[in-house]
Image (cartoon, rainbow, N blue to C red; front, side):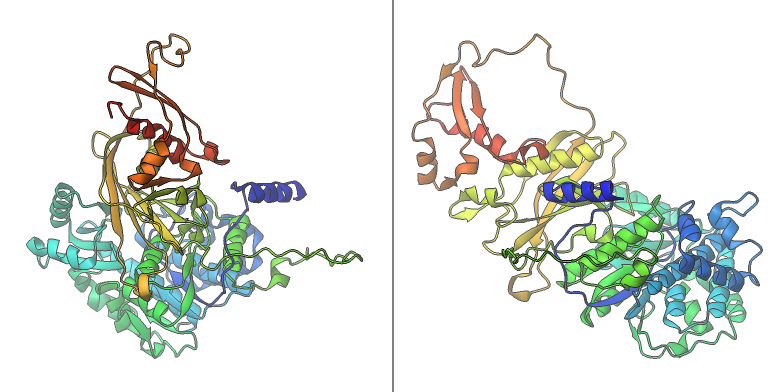
Length: 614
């Protein structure tokens, strides 16, 4: 709609967010790998809008319905639409075939718009969809595998469980020692994202231990344990039911999460492979690294909701790769508009769709150029201006804050992850805060970030906050921020930590580690209500004015170089042990901060006035 288009342009010019607006720095494209997750991306009503508006998607869903019919006693279309009398979508032998059909059909929708995979990768049952889309399995064989595999899993119900743990797999394995043989590492999703499975009572004890150690962990909402010894009980049944599956060589590279590497010959995707797919550890991080090493730069998750994207981005960052991850649909937003926004994310990163299909029936016409001479002007973007591994690339929520880029609720907990990128080019005012000749992020900026994080989780009070290491901004390039808010304890308190790393690893070293700069505790509730006695007199009665002459010269002599953005202190007064300050900040975007770091920093400069109690 023209009004919506104009509103989007206005928002772009003003640096605001708007529905349908996708912003960033243009990428160079690269090979696209389609990614298919396992269970967890489902939601009621997923993709129903596409059933009624996207012919390519609807046609492929109908194909999947016919392929599933010999193996299920329910209608795929009816389950997707939540029709009365359909089995509960949470049942494993319903949700897995339905997810398979949606993922395969989303891949067909991407294909109809000219987005074809250069490679495929799947997580657990997602490998069935990956093999089907790659052509290694017929649609009928894939339907058979996903239906009978999920039916066999029902026999495991009630005996075990699974949990996600925010630690590297090697550390998790060490914590499993007391339950050797009863608990296993089920999946390795990222550098600090591991899934454990096994006996219910052992899993309960393990989760109690991780909680006592302050390790973020969460039970996965299933009542069975796959990718562990429990699966051996259904081996004979599964091999018999899948006997006769006829895999074939595929021209599309298939990266196996059973082996963690490229599978050279997909004709080995027989019954034994699919048993190992369910029994063995899912080596998703390892397979993702293999993809990145082979030059794939766009990881496109073909699912109703991005559940692997954050883990993939963490792997991208850890590997120092030039790649990004993009989702397709989102929970509660599964229609053509969401799909088009994801397509825009791909286009922004240099992947070109088939515009004839994108604008089918409504392709814009050509407009005659004006006849007068061009008025030429150059608008030059510096190299390296693009955010590194910014999770908005996954279609996730923008943070709408000058120091932050995106925010996402962590899939394996009630925590929150906020990311951002700082540089002297994008935040020039930070260059006015130098100590010992180095530009440092002021401590007041750390506090502002903590307050912003707390406001998003209903914990507006910073109860504890410790600065551990300075954050030095590089002269060239930028710094990636990662602000993590943990799950609440019984009192509602949440742990907070802030890390950073260069957006371009030093000397090309992909092993640059994250540095923790601050940690703290966020608490619910706010400050006590101030007494409403009317406006407070200013300056305060009885306060003596302080002379600020030469203040910033003295700071500079001591190694604290404050530029104009941080020289906002205008007046100061003293009354006994109390100190009062009046400061201003000239920043045009000050209203987008809770409390602009330069403003609070300037107010604190009053403690440097000779004779003050600070």
